[in-house]
Amino acid sequence: MKLKFSFLIILFFLLTILALMNGPMDIGFSSIFGFVPTGVENGDELNIVLNYRWSKVIMAMTACGGLAIAGLLMQTYFQNPLAGPDVFGLTSGASLGVALAIFAQSSLFQFTSLELNFLGFGIEAFAAFIGAFLTFLLISVLSLKFRSKTVLLILGLLMASFLSGFLSLLVSLSNKDELRDFISWGLGSFEKLNLIQSLFMLVAVLFISILVFLMSKALNVFYLGEKYAATSGVNVKKFKGNVILATCVLTALITAACGPLAFVGVVAAHAARAFFKTAQHKILIPGTLLIGANFGLVVIIFLSFRFSLPLPANAIMGFLGAPLLLFFLLRKEHKHL
Image (cartoon, rainbow, N blue to C red; front, side):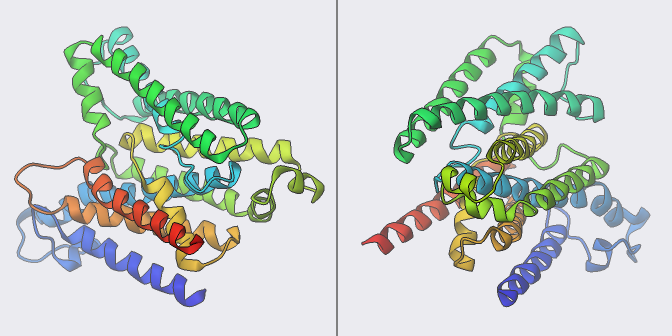
């Protein structure tokens, strides 16, 4: 296990350096770590690295790592390997909350653009949390009635579709300024927050991940069934509340900051189980976090390629995430044959 973690950590640092160096303007290695570059007028490299690239890279690793943890929690909570924030509608619920916040700000406070200052970001994050929380509660209630994992998955997809349809209706009724703001946010981006806000997000996700890590034993037991967890001494009611809270906070913060990001919440947990070959959450939690962060860095590297038009983050995540998810599903199916 130590060797596998070492590999992921080394890969993490290599991808971070590569992501910081690549972009429209080539950056010297020394500038990445804050050294004043030689031969560059007015320290342009240093300004780009500190004010743009570090915030983008930190946000990518934070967002994808946080969604990976949220996906792992949902898969354990519902005992469903396909559960994830986007699959079960949490991302759609959070998106609906953000959309309502954007439109409310535009109408009530006459904001004409989506500015993620602390106040604006706070409003959107709170609205996203309410949307994700209500969606999670509804899915939890349905899971009590429909025990089949397949039926629950279909219900989750229906929930996501319903919320997306309601969101489309809301967008169709918006004015051009609201529409521009929402479309810009909905395409997905790691560039909306500044360095201070990105660091705040990093600390928040790491703090929640540590709290989740402390629940490792309870997660192991709960994955075997709710009744088994209750007979093993787990306070099921408190445990479920903690899982719901952690999942919704992670999904809400990241969705509000970056837009609705797809696939990473499901793919990273599958990749961690396949890579470490264990069901122990003490290993899966840091492993999933690292794999999610590395996935985010790979997305940033792809986005740094000089395409004729800038691509949204969700486009790259779809191109990378969908084949990976299909690979893990086919691999699992092959093992059962």
